[in-house]
Image 1: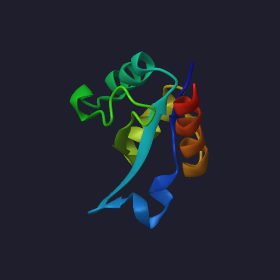
Image 2: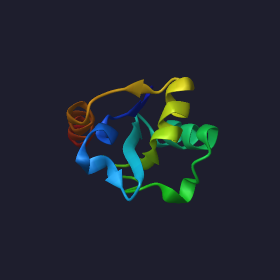
Image 3: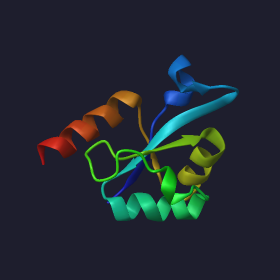
Image 4: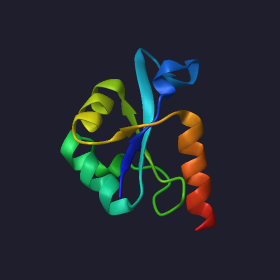
Length: 89
């Protein structure tokens, strides 16, 4: 089981005001919530909970913390493919 963070912060899509954002997903909800707890992201900010597209939008500072705690860096395309594969499962 793994947590993943994408590279959206490197694109114009990742700009939210002055912040740069990315997505954080995981192989399971429990793992996603555990990482959110570790990096200080409130569980209430989860998006699309219970679906194949379940994720958190996180700022680059939180992304760095997630990577320090073992999250795997992937591209936006890889993230989209992982969500697609979850739908098929």
